[in-house]
Image (tube, rainbow, N blue to C red; front, side, top):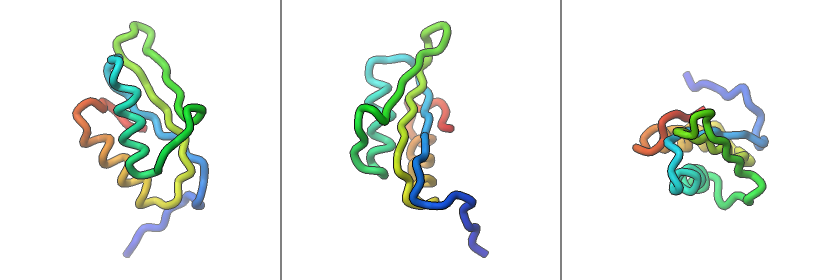
Length: 87
């Protein structure tokens, strides 16, 4: 039995990746997403630092085309040593 997605594709979908606040992390997070979604504009990427500045979240909004695409992004994100959490 295959599970069907409750999301209708294509759709705008924000992917939030969190990691340590290093100069490299925003580019790492963007690269993980772009590997599966193609190039995204700078406007589609937002960063926010934690209150103590130790961590950063990077939200990349993509036009998701399938549940498989999203699953692949989240799998690569959680497998990446620099990504602490993916939402």
